[in-house]
Amino acid sequence: MANVASAIRPGLDPRTAPLRPFSIGSNRARFETRSDGAILVTPVEKLGPYPEKLTQRLAYFARLAPDRLWMAERDGAGDWRKVTYAEAYRAAQTIGAALLRRGLSAERPVMILSGNDLEHALLAIACLHVGVPYAPISPAYSTIATDFSKLAYIAGKLTPGLVFAADGAAYARALGAITPPDAEIVVTRNPPPGRPATSFADLLAGAPGDAAVARAHEAVRGADVAKILFTSGSTAQPKGVINSQRMLTANQEMIANYFRFLKEAPPVLVDWLPWNHTFGGNHNFGIVIYNGGSLYLDDGRPTPRGIEATIRNLREIATTVYFNVPKGFEELAPRLRADRALRETFFSRLNMNFFAGAGLAQHVWDELDAAAVETLGARVPIMTGLGATETGPFALACAPEHSKSGHLGLPVPGVELKLTPVEGKWEARVRGPAVTEGYWRDPEATAKAFDEEGWYRMGDALKFIDEADRSKGFLFDGRIAEDFKLSTGTWVSVGPLRARAIAHFAPLFRDVVIAGLNRDNVAILAFPDIDGCRAFCSDLAGADDVAAILADPRLIAEIRRRLAAFAAEATGSSNRVERLMLLEEPPSLDHGEITDKGSINQRAVLARRAALIEELYAEPYSSRVICANED
Image (tube, rainbow, N blue to C red; front, side, top):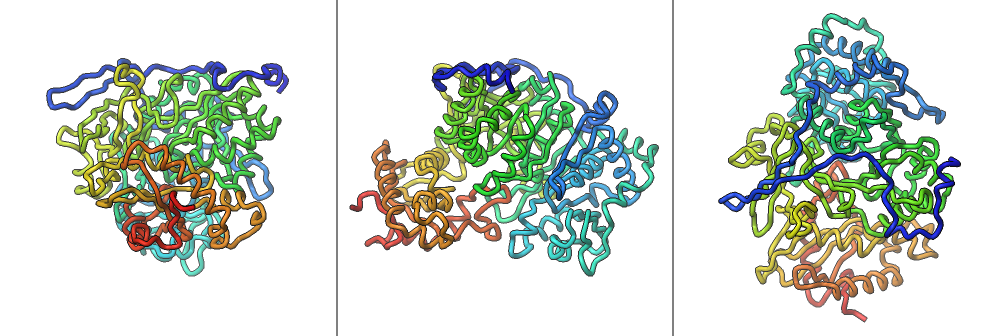
């Protein structure tokens, strides 16, 4: 790391430090206002060619660099289990042959219940290679949910012919509850009691069936279903987003066309993001295969306890690009500042940090910049954009000079954007080769998702960063379905207000829900970050009694002080919050209050906790309501 250390320039201001150079494309756009008021935004550059099937890239790198690491995972002893490109391609053919022998198809696809691991990855690429659709399902539906209603609904939609879970014992209840009688159960270890199960090793031990596999692979077309990703959204039941082979490859070309450093040197990722979600399972998993990179499966999580495993991995593996959600960067940033050796490894060959899923708090952004400048004498670009499961996900991306939390950039080549006036806002609608054709076996939801011209309705509202210079791109302006009116008729833009509140109260609140439909003013239900609250009360640092922590007078006083400051900053009734309530009970997965990806379902929380909303607005205020104007 000597070269890194020698680049340190003490005293350089992170706010004015230059960006570390990295290779990036262009997303310049043309703007056209139609006679119906819609604004069309079209990239100037065209998208280049892309393969029909993602595993064509796997085969290419298996020939070009057979011994290159494709994927690695920690074993029980903490060592890395490794799979090369040649081994991965051979496994895709062997497992693919086993899938074909079982007669699996779009009518009887593969259902994967467990999370990220090497067996999951090998089964996925085998499915992609021979054209058997698969559906990775959130492990939370099997292991955290107290009933299996959503999981059973998904299984009913899929009608799987094979169900995989890494640990049969850990998933035994779920397997027993939802596996169809004619479906085969496959496990890596610990077969579930009372039900026949095939060992994953048996799939690898069979004959490769080269001719049958070759014929099946040749028959796969870009329009064929590759995988089905179930997204919770704000509805009662999950929706299965159809991901075609073309969606995967076109989207990967969009990513590599914009972040060109991915093509120039094989990317190296340390990543925990779940494969049942499009960010981890399409975007990051696909980046590795498409660009011949290496993926180290991160056994950590973005929590105060889980982050230590991530830190261990980042000390050992120098990534070329780092993806995470804002909470992950929030946990990482102070550790980078405190640990010089970690900083030097982390930044040694890092081209870019990238976040998605929510806004990144400014103090976290500043910490990351400061750590990079102290180590390199330059900032490392922090990038984001806008996408959805239905868009592959990559659709809009910021230019480095305009990247900021809440900024979304412009559509990348291959994506056309239409801004349609809805309820006084601009709703984003898109089309292109990476946009889904609809929802699995759900024609009603599919019809609602597209407008009369065939554009996919994202449901996100956008506004220009600078109306006078549209080339700077867009800001996020909330979710159309979440916004509401006060009793005065004033619209409340929930998304921006929620983001501001979370940032203002950091690190005390993990999330907030905005209330006030048909009321005179806005109020908040807050899900506290217990670790953040506990740390604020130093003598309660080891306490496990959540109720005691949340009732601590010092914490209440600090929240009240911040609430008063937040109210004072308001510009009107639509963003003035004068009261809130702390919620001791966390959001419920079973009741749809939290999605499988961990995001809050605003409408579900408001519906389930209607009594608390009444308590928030009742006068005199209950003892659980914190008001800004109290002494």
